Length: 133
Image (cartoon, rainbow, N blue to C red):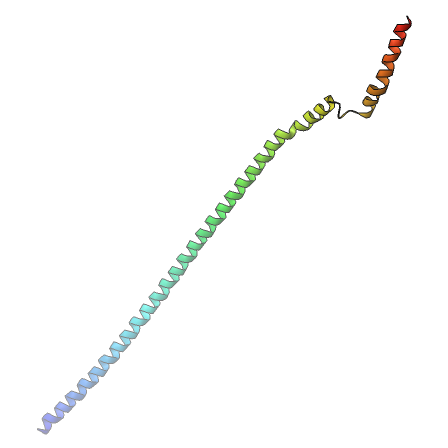
């Protein structure tokens, strides 16, 4: 009986030691698994951050491209407007000056003096000369 009791006690102690060893192995495996999961999570977060940076860069470049195209379009419109204005107003000055001149508004002072003073005096002299004969 003592032999059975001793062997049962030894068996029980052996089983407890095996359980503790098995529990330690399971805890170390659980720790390794959590470390692997955390490492993979960190890698996934890095990939997501890199992908987000790439998307932001693409978006920023698209905005810059649109701004550059809009600026180029405005510059082209400005050049066209300048050329159109230049073509339209190019002859306008000469035309206005010639119209003012033909209407007698813009006449050189010497020409006006000749028209107003010399020509009437000259005409009266010619008439007087013709009348004398």
